[in-house]
Amino acid sequence: MLRSLLNLKTKTRSSFEWMLLELRHKRYLTRF
Image (cartoon, rainbow, N blue to C red; front, side):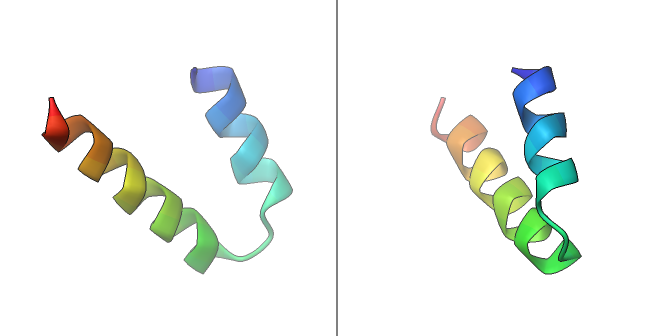
């Protein structure tokens, strides 16, 4: 899980996209 997230972070150049990804992850965690 962490490795894939790090890979996505390195692939995405814009920090804005990474912020949106983090928000999605937080939403996913709040569901449980």
